[in-house]
Length: 307
Image (tube, rainbow, N blue to C red; front, top):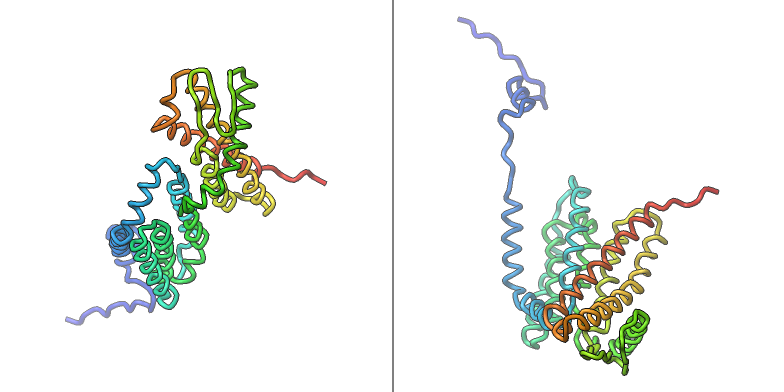
């Protein structure tokens, strides 16, 4: 018997049965999850190698110095990355070892330097340098340009050395105590202020270095950058949010001192230290952050008046 001639399939097209299968989706092509496995592996190696930096960060959070940027900055950086990743889909991925590998080597040296000196700052800076080098090495310059703000912003998560903070807190303590004392006196609370010390009939509130407002000022100023970066509008609107973060940070500390003094008057000295004192700080800083975010939304929606 003569065989029927097979119908030739034009170049670039699938046979009819493959087309129908592709359209119906009955046999979808399996997804390649190797990138996820590699990412998880790199993440584990990153945590293990920079474990001293994470240990020091935990100690700094527990010490009472309250470097809130250690938590807030990475969270906001991840938020920026989640916004940028969909825009980077379809970008040609081509690793750049020439730029990425030197940064990874520098990060390793910084980490070792911090371990030898028993100082957290070099190791924590090295961790951020490593992430920047890793993105360049694995995904290349195009992807890095899209994520550059989020990656460079992570440097603000590194707390300043305590000696620098102490040198900057002196005047802020006096100003914060004076303003809080004036507000509490206006509200009718019996108070006597001596420098950075607020005296009440039942207890005494000492405005220590960690209560100077510098950390809340640093944290809110750092948080204003991604908020301004993501908000829609002209440049002056973005700059306005960054500028407003300074009085918000100072006001947040005054509110915290007033809340601590009021609760101390009602409950006792126990609220001025330990976890109640920390909890008050967390609530006030978060409230100031959400207020700043609300202001950015209102400013970005505000339209210029018609001529």
